[in-house]
Image 1 (cartoon, rainbow, N blue to C red):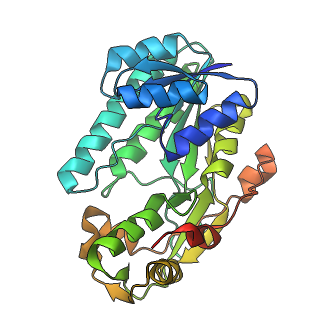
Image 2: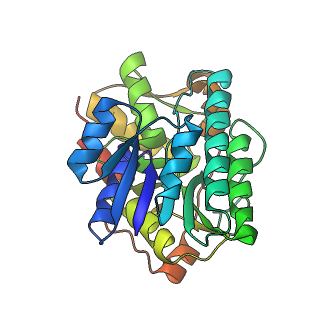
Length: 293
């Protein structure tokens, strides 16, 4: 397949591009800067210059492709307004991609987060939230899955709170960055809340499998570790950075504070059984040992 990929030079996207190219596909990668275009070309993809907000460019990319994988997101969590703007931009981009693919039976794989299920690990059949700080992303993904009725083989790969590689990425990466800035490896509350995780190289395999074979309207969990306690994550970060490990106020994490404080383990049993996906790379706690002081 010729696959149009947004976000193809990020931590997850670069792994997805390599996975696609390594399995016989070709890649057209959205590139918002000269540096991104060079990185995409160096990886073996054909760059298409444009940003996520350039809707005409997105239409052109999707029109040239046999399938689309959407990963781009302006990861600006500095304020509620910045987060809302990022979600609005992504929602418009997804709607544009979906309209371009309508009636073609081509695959559109989008990204989502694993949902919260009180008192248990969430599963692929649980709905994603459509309210709260990131509810807009849930509504956008639901609209894409609904395109299954309009001739789009739309699917969603739900990513856990941390997608990691070489000790960086995801919520754990944010904890690491904040620890460097504040001098404390912190965790909200008592730290017993659990976050699921997956290695970026394992997540990339699932994106490819969803592109190739997932049925329309389906959701999948890219979860390798069902849930690590946040204080255990903070403990590794603190040891690697030689910093104290302490509970801190949820407000430390801005608009993500309520999410950081929530127990949110997730299961991938159905995904493994239905698509034959099996994570093979290091767990989060193992991978965090790559953090450099």
